[in-house]
Image 1 (cartoon, rainbow over the protein chains, first blue to last red):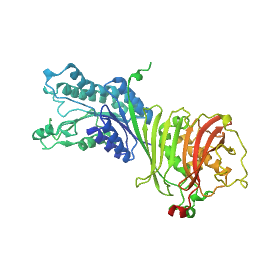
Image 2 (image 1 turned 90 degrees about the horizontal axis):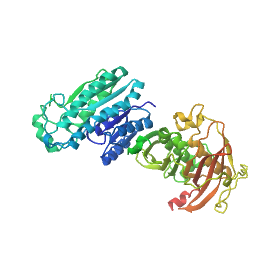
Image 3 (image 1 turned 30 degrees about the horizontal axis):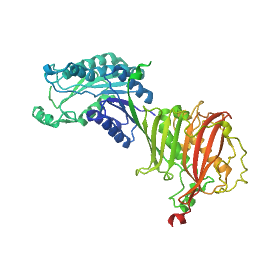
Length: 244
Length: 287
């Protein structure tokens, strides 16, 4: 019984949930990791159950390297493989740079950047053996421009780091049939940003509207497909031209 | 100390399996599986055997947990409504995989959402919640001949009555069983194949019909603990006694307390097997 397994961090809600549901429709087995969103995770599992999909939810703080490694081990123990790692977890907070706390500063790196390293190094051995794997990391639409971002400085630096980590992983893993790409959303109605904030930003989006979580899911599905096998180290802006 | 001990992780799983129900006992001595007889009891057609439905319900749990369930697992299964030949059976299992032991809730339902059978299972459990089982408490006894089997009654099915011992030698892999169940898990094939749960619980049915001459009867529920797997060539004996006998809503029930033993020494399974040995006739159902 051939099946592919996707591990999705931040998978309980928003973009991660949409990816889980979309991949499930395409026959993937879903392991959705969450940290605090237990109700959302239970809701997702119920939705996947209704769709007759094999799925699991795991509560894990992947900013802890041991927890990240254990998470990968648990999924591989249960289903024998992880074919795709989708790093969706990426909390942020808005605070002026000079008012940022030490704790808040570190949290942005601990939750946005470091888990990608911890999880990637844990999943690649199985992917290398199978000579097939996909890693998709979520960046931020203008993170490649390295502009000043005084309200979300640490988050922005972390997302810039995600792009460098993505390209570095892409280079070292390319010989093994593994691709590593970034998807960089602009304004997506995912529930993570207040709707008022999104409304205010519409005037800045060349297309004139915010994106949906399905836009992100379809992009990820494409990157996971065999059609995208030659796309590696890319950063796909998902912003309708905002931030480019 | 393992570095994992400091990491809290809660894992829940949902597992699904779909299969087309097959009446594997249409030609059996138990005429409840025959369309005409079943109709006389108010059913739409011959009942797919409960043990077959149980076999379907074990698929996701065995696929996920393998020997951890087959050798160290339990299940309490109840059959609420029948499946009929050709119906699609949707088995859904929800596991608390981070619990110790792992808990699994299983349903076998139809497309219309009706849950025809429900079960609770545990994985990697070593507690004897069905009671301590000692081989000496389950003595061997001779089976009656087919012709001399008594017709069961409340007076005959006295709790504590020792049943005649049924003995079967495992011939594995059993391709007929696997084909009848549409079973594809590899653990049941090859040189190291283990006996299918259907086969083992089927022996619980067999000991009932080899001890008593039954009319149409219905498998209602089973509570079982797996202690080891039975393998090719092993002789499995089923020993047991009547545990309970009661009437409910016009149905006459019997509960068997059974021990399945391999090679006379190793416990394979402990089971409480509940059957309606005399279903309420349709005239009473309508009355």
